[in-house]
Structure formats: structure tokens, C-alpha cells
Amino acid sequence: MISTRVVATAGYVPEQIISNDDLSKIVDTTDEWITQRTGIKERHISAGENTSVLVTNVAKKLLERASVSAEEIDLIIVASVTQDYGTPSLACMIQKEIGAVHAVAFDVIAACSGFMFALSTADKYIKSGGYKNAIVIGGETLSKIVDWTDRATCVLFGDGAGGAYVEASGEAGIIREDIGSAGDQYEILTEGYTECANAFNDKESSIHPKWYVNMNGREVFKFATKNVAKSIKKVLEEEQITQDQIKYFVPHQANVRIVEVVSKKLGIPFEKFYINMDRFGNTSSASIPMALNEMNEKGMLEAGDLVVLSGFGGGMTWGTMLIRW
Ligand code: ACO
Figure 1 (cartoon, rainbow, N blue to C red):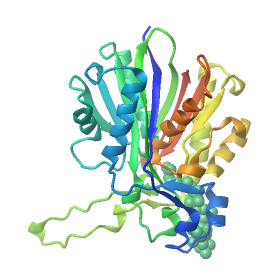
Figure 2 (cartoon, rainbow, N blue to C red):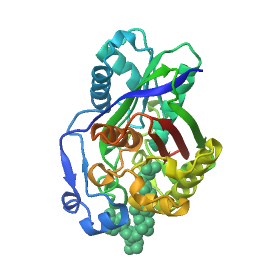
Figure 3 (cartoon, protein in one colour):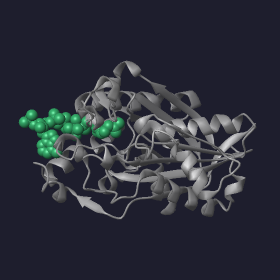
Figure 4 (cartoon, protein in one colour):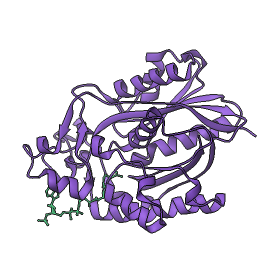
């Protein structure tokens, strides 16, 4: 049976680092408030590099680390809510930059669960037998859709990209998944709204207030703690394994308090959850692959380890995946 294995990972963040103290100079906030409520201390913010630049850097590193040529790539899937253009997709822009002339390339949108949805899609293509490998990336420049006058949201997000090169294999890789959507709750977290205005109707063009991230923080918190816990539990139960068999849980890096609640609900020691939101903030679809890549670069993962990736996001959506390293 064909399985999909993660062969290489990579990440990229823009150079500029913004601390909580830096933010306190532009909005009425403090390092103490942000740290206590979210666990975030600093984030990287792009000084002009658009999302395509971030994700292309990741793609180039993946080719190098996996020792494959661009011409050999069958599939490129990018998850993002901050694309450079409505069209082309970021995946097609990567295709051009790296010269992956034989690849099928497209983007998926599932907000902070985006990487999970993209990886799940790549897994299905590979298991179909028609595709032998894929580059899967989550990348965001959330700084361009954040209202920098809104202290309730601007302190939460950061820019970055992360990804994985995956390949068809005879050995188990992606073992089990649980992904889902709850569109009935879409209004609790939105961004990028564009009004249906046109010159014919003589509407004045301006950025609609809902272009920026709009969030009911408390409802998102409730959604996340409930669904992430439920989804991880489901995957473990269906695979008939217990949490002690899992080496690490890699959660979406939105808020450390969400992870603490999930850890308590499931009786999983907090130390088993990898946390890097203190240094990167919430990078939406990039957060899980960036975390996974950091762990990989630190040598925390050994062949055969079981790892659980789990995220939630706008839509609303969630996704959990059990993988053997
Ligand atoms: N600095 C200081 N005070 C602030 C700030 C800030 N940056 N932001 C909000 N406040 C104030 C509010 O104005 C409010 O003041 P008031 O009581 O005088 O009205 C007070 O703090 C409490 O505000 P709440 O929004 O109720 O604060 P809460 O404890 O819920 O924390 C937070 C807000 C951190 C966003 C929380 O709701 C949360 O963690 N939600 C989960 C959502 C999340 O993590 N989203 C990330 C993006 S979504 C995703 O990744 C899918």
C-alpha cells in the first residue's frame, strides 16, 4: 500500500523582529498583557517581502534538503490566506521561480488549518498512485491584513512560511487524519472581505473594515479548545494508541492558553506540546510546518517517532494528523 512520508522540512521568516514593547509604542498594550494572555513575546514582520517570496524560499530549501530537482516535482500545494494575488496562486508563482515545469500547482484556503488541509490533499493525490511527490507549504504575511490600530488583534500575528517535501513510500508516513469544517460559525473569524462594489454603480472605492482580521476572541478560544481536543482524541482512538506512544504534539501556535486547556482536557503533559509562538506569534497556515521544521532542525525527531500535528482556524476548520517520522 502506498503511504505518504515527510522526507524534508524547511522554514523561512523575514528578518525584522517586533517585540511586545515595540507594539506598546503604537497601541495601548503592555508586554505583560500580551505575554499573560497569549504567550507571545515577539514576531517577525515582513519589510516588503510578499508571501510569494517567503514560500519560494521554503520551496528552494526543500529541494535542496530532499536532494530532488524542480523538474522531478509532481505537485505543489500552498496554504495561505494572504496570497500576493487573487490569481495566480502562490503555488504557480513558486512553480515559475523554481522551474517545476511538470508540477500541478494550486493553493488551498483553510486559514490556520491550511497546512493540514494541504497536506491531507497531497496525501490523497499521492495515494491515488498518479503522483510520486509533493511540495506542501503554508505561508503568510499577516502583517498586511492586520489593523495596526486594533490592539485586540495586532498583537497576535506574525509573518513566516514553513513546509514539507513528501514522497510516496512503502513505509507508513501519514497514518491517520481527522479534518473538518464548521461553516455555520464562519463569522467568528474573518479577514480579507472585499465589497461587491464597481464603478458602474458609482461606489467609492476604499478598504472595507472587514478587510482586516476580525475576530470574536472568546468564541475562537472556545471553538479551538473544544475541537482540537476532540480531534486529537478521535485520531488516537481510531488508531487505538494512547498519548504516551506519541513523542510530540505539534499544535497550531495561536495562543499558549489554548494549548494548556487542550493538554489538561486530554491529560497529555504540557511538555509534550512543542511551543514556539513566543518567538513567532500566530503565523496562521505557516505555524505548524514552521514548528515541525524547527523540531527537525534541532534533531528532536528520530525515524519511527509518532508525531501528532493539530490545528484550527477560520472557516471554521480543524485538522489533526498522525504521522510516523
Ligand atoms: N492589550 C491590553 N488590553 C487588551 C488588549 C491588548 N493587546 N487586547 C484586548 N485588551 C483588553 C480589551 O479591550 C478588554 O478590555 P475591557 O475589559 O476594558 O473591555 C480586556 O482586555 C479583555 O478583552 P478580551 O478580548 O475579553 O480578552 P481575552 O481574555 O478574551 O483575551 C484573546 C483576548 C487573547 C484574543 C483571547 O480571546 C484568545 O486567546 N482568543 C483565542 C483566539 C486566538 O488565539 N486567536 C488567534 C487568531 S485565530 C486563529 O489562529 C485561528
